[in-house]
Image 1 (cartoon, rainbow, N blue to C red):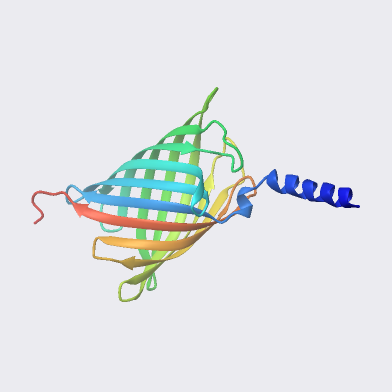
Image 2 (image 1 turned 90 degrees about the horizontal axis):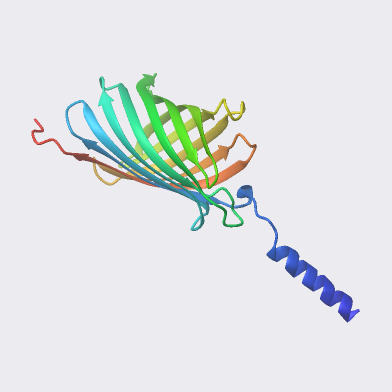
Length: 225
């Protein structure tokens, strides 16, 4: 009997130690920092970095850095082109060779109001060039995001958006990302945000992520009049 109990304990320990986690089982996190640096009345340079973890403070998943150039046609319409670089670890359990990406993105964003609710439409076309240890590939991805950002009280505001992402070459099922968060304006040019991201991937994964962001603006114009 003692031998049987000991065997059962060893089996449980072994299975627990080697159980394969999935991305859906963990509450992960996305950490963002973004800056917009005005260089003229209609143009600005944008810097952005994003860091994903499979868990809140552990287990690297993804890193992205982007450099963008914005042109404001008017107060409502803006066009942007980005150059980006990213690093993927696609396995939550074991260390595998990473996937590296170079990315070119074209973006149009348009703002308007529906009655009194401010809305922003954002359309992106991404040209993605991947490199793995033994292969290279390229795909195009289409993205559309509808969002709103509105003041609540004093320096507090809400930010809600939903985005569809489609990669026709790989999968006809779009990815969906829903985000809802609260932000606090530290000043006219700086804010912090904390929110929740529900990500339904094209592979049918349902991921829950905390998102934390710091965003700031600078004015690099010599003559600001």
